[in-house]
Length: 598
Image 1 (cartoon, one colour):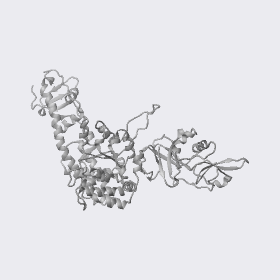
Image 2 (cartoon, rainbow, N blue to C red):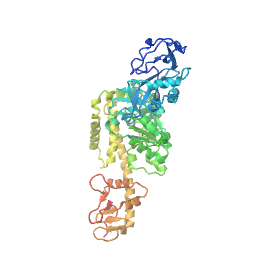
Image 3 (spheres, rainbow, N blue to C red):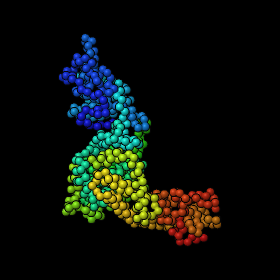
C-alpha cells in the first residue's frame, strides 16, 4: 500500500476540486444544494468537499436539505490497476491532523463491501470521523460510489512505469514525464531516502567535479546513472563490488554514487538482505542499489542473493489462501563494498563462487590507488581529508542528478534505441586495444564497464557532471583492464587446479577407460583414443565432487583442453564406434598424460 506524503491538497490532475464555506464548528448547516457546486470529479452528487472535511446533504427535520460533516478531508483521485490488468483499486488522498496529504490504495474488493474495516488504511494515515451516527458507514459508501475519471497505473516498484518509458516514479511520490502512476508496497526506508537537497549546480560542483582524476569515483558515479538505461536496453542488473581494507575510501565511493538518487540513508547494508532484499531491490528499480559491508551477510546465502539481484526476480510465494502472490521484479545496478571479495566471503562459509556470480558482481580492488581509493585529492592534504570533504558534500547535496538524468532522457525518446549501438561501439574499440581471451564471460564483464562508460558520458553531455568529454569512457576502460589483469592471474591458478584434479584421477584409473574401436577394456568411466579422453558425466561429477561440473568444464574449455561440438554446449557426442553414442566430456590427452597408451 502506498503512503505518499503531500504538503498541499492533491489534485493537479483532478478538475473542479474546491472548498466550500461551511462553518467548521457546527455539525450541520442549512446550506442549500445549489451552492455546493461544482464537486470533485466523480464525487456522488449528495456529497461535497470543504476545507475542513467531507459533507453529506441529508434531509433535516423539516424536510430541508442540510449539509452534515462526516469526516476530515479526503479525495478519491482515481482508479488504478496493474499494467497487465487486475489489481483494481482506488487511489485515495487523505489529510492527516498535521495538514499533510497522504495517498493510499484501497483494494476494490475491500471497498465493495462498504464496511468500516475497508477504511482502516485511511485511519492509519490520519482520517478522522465526525462525531455523528454511522459516520464510518457513510464514508465507506462515499468511497465505494465515488467514480473519478482518472486512471492510474499501479506499480509495486519505482522507476519506469511501463515499456513506453514515458513515466518514471520516484520515492518521494513524484512522477517524471507523462502518465498517472501510483506505487504500492515499496520499501518505506528506501522511498523515504529518495528525496532531494541542494541544487543541481551545487551537487555538480561539490560532488561530481572532484571525481575528475579519480577513476574509481568516476566509475562509481557513472554506474549510478546506468539504472534508467538498463530496462531501455533490455540488460540485466548487476554491478561492481569495491574490495579493500577499511578507512581507505570505499564507503566514500558508495556515498558519491548514492547521492545521485537520494540522501546518505539511501545506502543500504548487506545485513538486512536475507529477508528484505526483494522489497529493497524493487524500490531501487531503475535507479541504484548500494550495499555496504559485505561481511554482514551470511556467506552461505551471499551468492544466491547476487544471482537474484542480477536476474531481477524475487521468490515465488503463496498467500494464506494458497494463491500465488505477485512476484516482485526489478532491474537494478548494484554497487557493493567490503573488506573481502565475494569469493573470499563465500569461502568463509564453505561455499564456492562460480563464474556466473563473479560476472554479476565484478570485484575491483578499491585500496590500491595512490591514496587508497583516490588518485587526485584536489588540494586536500591526504586521502582522509578528501574523503571527509566528499562525505560532507554528499550530505548537503543529493537526489537531484538522477531525476535530472531521467528528464533529459525523456526529452530525447528517439535517441534511446541508439544507446545499444554506443555500448557495442565501445566494446569493439576496447577489443581492438586489448588482447582478450575467447571467453564469453569476459565479454559480458566488458559490457558492464561499457554501460557505465555510456551512462557517464551521457550524463556529461547533459551537463550534469562537469567532467571533460571522454573521462567516463577512459576510467571505465582503465578499470576494465585492471580487472582483466587480475582475472588472468586468478584464472591461470583456477585452470591449473581443475586440470590437475582431472589429470590425477585419469592417471590413477587408466584401466577404467576403454580404448575406442579395439574393445580393449570395459568402459567404466569412459573411453580413450590417441588424442582424447572421453569422460562420462557421472565420472566427471565424481572427479570434481562438490564443484559445479559445468563450470569446471568451462574452465577446461577456456584452457583449450575441451573438445565440443558446434554451439555453446560443453559435452561431446561420441561417434558410431561407441554403442549408443553417449554424451561425454572430451578432454585433450596431452593435457592429462601426454600420450594415451594403447
